[in-house]
Amino acid sequence: MRKAVITGLLACALAFYLNGQQVKAAPIDLLTKPVVGDTGIELALSTTTTGVLLPDTNKQADPTDQPAPIVHTVQAGESLSKIAAEYQTTWVLLYYKNTQIDNPDVINVGQEIMIPAPDEELAPREMPAVAVEESTANTAERSYYASGDSSGNLYVPGQCTWYAKSRRPDLPNNLGNASTWVSRAAAQGIPTGSKPQVGAIGASGNHVVYVESVNADGTVTVTDMNWSGPYQITRRTVVASSLYYIY
Image 1: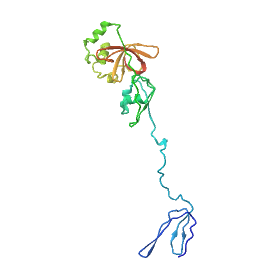
Image 2: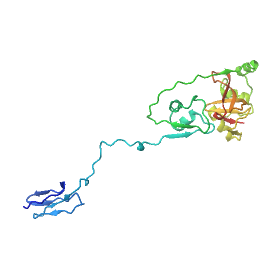
Image 3: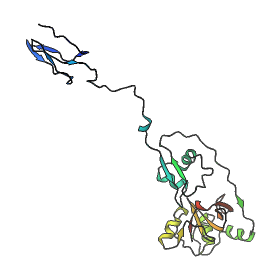
Image 4: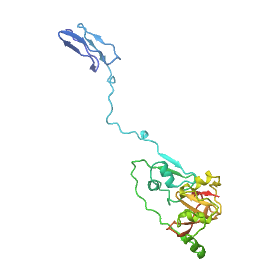
């Protein structure tokens, strides 16, 4: 049997003999022309080692393969709780993720909020102290509202909805929980919007307030009930864009 001279790096064909018959192996490298020996064995000659590609198990993960972060732009009437429900997370995790938020109760229209991944580990943040200034301007009014006696008011006494109805007796008794006041009011043709107005009911998350004044610095002064406890009336100043309004 004449020996074939192999000029490449690898001979990519083998000859097998089964039951005395010769079997030809098909060449793997098709880039070169096979040399045929006098026995009929085809030897594939290769001058390259790139004929077969194997997966690179040492390849590092490409950062570009990671999913793009989800960014939510705050709309009028939204709160962290409402945004969290939309993305199946919690307002606490949103607060932990977005360190630019100083107070989880105050977010601004147009503000961008990063949505954490479901398995993302976040460092806890300390919650800000709630500064509440109780209204003492009208003791008689406080006593009246704390009594739970308000004709035509079918909301639960001591709650924010009960206080809002007391300040706005023209509103119906079927607005439900605070979180549904704006949508149900709009459905009944009651004007709603994002512009603050004295005498309007402001809503954020599951809480409603009464607007006492609209301030030049973009805030509103509001009064409400059950911010610090049932039947307790508080007076606070909040960012106007953090509320959606019923007029």
